[in-house]
Structures are given as structure tokens and as C-alpha cells.
Length: 617
Image 1: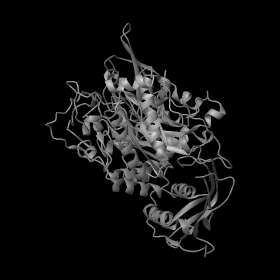
Image 2: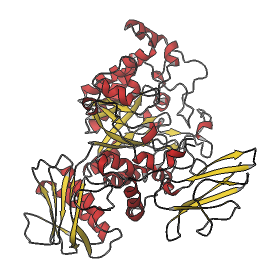
Image 3: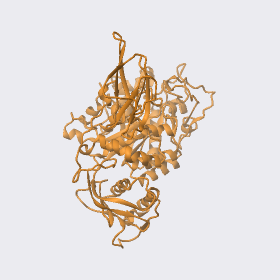
């Protein structure tokens, strides 16, 4: 384990005006706090522009009641009182960008200034965070002026609802919570090998068969054997088109755009199981299984790139989905395509010869270009994973860059003129576990701590200013292989999506890990708890790193934590550590095979997080 990965050094900073420690997430660009405060009570009046009263007004009244238990009324017409009011004011002001706002809190009134609905919504979310958490009575909100604008206009979160279906109610809950942290793009991964999750009226078998798989609960994801045709299929679910309309409408009032993804040509086992004629060949080779995948094994999951019926079928689907979603974006996937069947398929090889394609990479480009033509015919912008850059690429597409290492799409895409959304596997794939793998729930054998998400810089320093301007924003992506329950799903989302929200919204100059950590501890963990959100507290985990000195029969131990400002206490005799145990001051030596237990404690002697336990061998 790389020691430096988990050791975070805090850098103190000063906000505009008076130096402040505050608990806002994401951190605004300027916070100036003054004396006094606004007393919120049952007689407070709310004034909202007429055109926003139905959506924003209803939301503001409901959220304030939930936060404070106060029944505060919305007024019609212009401001009719001299004090004790909250005013939402649409303005034309050069210092306020789209989605930005100015929040002014004084002893007599609160004013939220914005140029658009989104800015008013975002300003209100900051106001909610200014109200002391847990308030259930008349409340004093500190006087302050906040000026705030978003760094990026793509502040996204991907939810994979294909691997494990999540209910409409659960999706709505996540939209409510995430939008309160200024997330404004909600990427729904609706199809994959393990399930098709959206009703298509022209092709009902997509949900009649494709939304359901055989039960392999209790068997490791990558060890599950394929289902047989005779097995009952009881695991799954899907969204009706009315469900999708409800989700879109709910999200719209919260400044959230729902982005649909239909993943093709690969990751299509559920689609092929529903309509096998879309697979390669005329006579299917022996051993090919046409059942929805039950786990990680999903061979023969690529659509045929050579049959014209494939494109006709997908055009019908895209047209139906495009009509349903008002967003200008349509995500077609395009990633991780196993092309082995294409190499043997006569239909694919004929297309390859007819179009002078030199290899299967160019055949995939041909496929994606056909998708691009279909999507643009619906007046949508096509998004694809960065694999669509291979072969001949697809000019006019938007790229979602996820790969690193020898693949450098976060550089290649903007350098080649593509609008690019950063969702780096190394920094933003929150399906990776967030603490030591031997402590965390089942997941990939790969760790992505909260601090690494927080410290991510989406714009690579190698890009020129012109290339950097093509970076649309940042996105955290939660893949669903290891999230079978709502509780586990939320555990993986929170608090890392809050870190991603600050990366996406805040100017890097005002970001500070220590401040963010304390904001979680002193405020947002409690807010999330009140919203009945299951939150991981893995940032308090102690990471043990040790080696065995065989020559001297000693174990050499290092203990690390990503938090700042707390002390580690440990034992090596199997006792549960308290602040009466050994205080960690640096690496130490002990007897091999000792049972090490370590925990992180605050200054009051309270254990934060869980005890780490490991046998030194």
C-alpha cells in the first residue's frame, strides 16, 4: 500500500473578507460573515417571482418546514413588508453567472439574487445549510454575504441501475439529496448485460424478459454461472415510461437534468436475450447462451455490427427514448466491446469489406458513427465513453473520459476538439471501496478514499487554455455490481459524492481538505442522517502498513489516516484500544503474528469510525 496515498496535508486558506471556518459544501467562492443574524420564525414571509412560484415556491416552503418545523407562507405580489422576509430576486448582474447567486442575510431580511431559476435554487440550498442543523424552533441565521458561481456546468453523478435495479422512490431520494449539493446532471445507466431497465413500447420483450434474471444471491459476482432457459427469473425490475416522466419532472424542479444511457454495441446481453436476432451470424454457434447475465460473466454480449436490422432496431429505441427525455444529451455507451464474434461473423466482415475498414476498431467506429447519425436526427448530442475515440473517432460527439494509464483520453479528447466530461477511474469511480478492502463491504479489490476524490483536479495541466475550455465538467460514477441493497448503494455514494460536488462547483483556490473534513463531521453527517441517508465514515479508518523483518524477527508497522487533527491509538495484544492505549507517534516494531488493533480518537477521547484489526503476518 502506498503510504503517501492516504496521508493528507491540510493547507489553510483565507476566504474573501474575514477569514472563516464554515461548513458549506460545496465551498462558495466568497463568504463574508458579519455580526447579528436573521431570526426565522412562523411569521417570516417568502416572496418569489410569479413565474417560479409553482415549482420553486412549493419546494422552498416544503423544505423549510422539513428543516425547521416552521410553516412559513409564500406571498403573492411584490414585497409588502419592511422586515422578516425572504426575497428571491431575478437580476441582471455581470458578477452572477448562470446557476450562480448572491445570498445576503441581514437581521431584517434575506435576499437571494440570481439571473435564472437554477441560481435561485442553488442559493436556497446554501441558505438551508446556513440554518443550524437540527433546528426545530425559531432560528437565528448568522448574517453574511455569499457570492457564488459554479466552476463547471456539468456536475454529474452516474447511477448504475442495471446491475442492481433501484426503485423510482430511491432514485427520487438521491435526486433530492444530491441536488442540495448542487449536482445538476443525473446520468442513468439504464441498460447492461444484467438488465434492461426502461419500458420500450415497440419492443415489450426488453422488459418482459430483459429486465429479469435468475437469482444468484450469495454467490460472488464474478463466480456466478449462467442461467438456463428453464430457471425462473425473479431478480430485476424496470421503469415504466410514466415512471421516467415522474423522475424527469421531479428532477427539473431541483435543477437536475436526467441523462439516459443505452449501452451499445457491447454490454448488451439483456438486449440480445430479449431479441436474439440482433446477435452475429445466421446460425448461432453451439454454446451461445441467450439469457440475461446473472453476474460478471457475460460472454457474447456484443450486437452484430453488420446486420442492418441492428441499426433499424436501435433507431426505433433511440427515437422512443429521445421523445421521453427533454435533455439535449443521449449517451450510447460504446465501451469495452469484445469484438471476437465480429471477426468471425459474415455480416460484420461484409460491412468491413464494403466500407474498406481495416480492422474491427474501425468497424466499431462505423457502428458508433451510425449511432451518432441516429442520435443527431433526434436533435440530441451524442455522448460516448472514451473508447469511441478509437478507430476513426466520431466528430461531433461528446466524450466521457474514464480511462487512465496508457490510455489518455482526458488529454486526447480535448486535444482532438471533443467536448469532454471527466469521470476518471482513478479519482471518480466511487464503485471502488473507500477504505482497506479487508474492512469495507464487498467490492472491487481497489481503494478510492474520500480524500482522493476531493483532491482531484479535472483539468489536466498538460492542456492548453483552449483545450481546457472543452472540459465540460466532472462526474462521480457509481457502478452497481456490488450494490444489491439501497443501504449499500448509499454507503458508496456518500460522502464521496459531496467531495465530487465540491470539485465540480468550487474554485480550486477555496478548496481545503481540512475544512471539508470538519464540515462533514460537524454538520453534514447529521444532515444526511436526518434525511435517513446511510453514510460511510471510512475517512476515519486507520490504514495499517507493515513488513516483516525476518532477520530480527520483528514486524515494522506504519499507521495512517486520511483525516487531519486526530490521534491514532493502538494495541498489539488483542485488546480494544482506547486513549489509554499506545498513542501512535511514528513507525514502531513489534512481534510478528501479533494482533494489531487501531482506532482514531478525537480530543474528547471518542472513537471515530471503526477499529482496524489485522494479524501481522
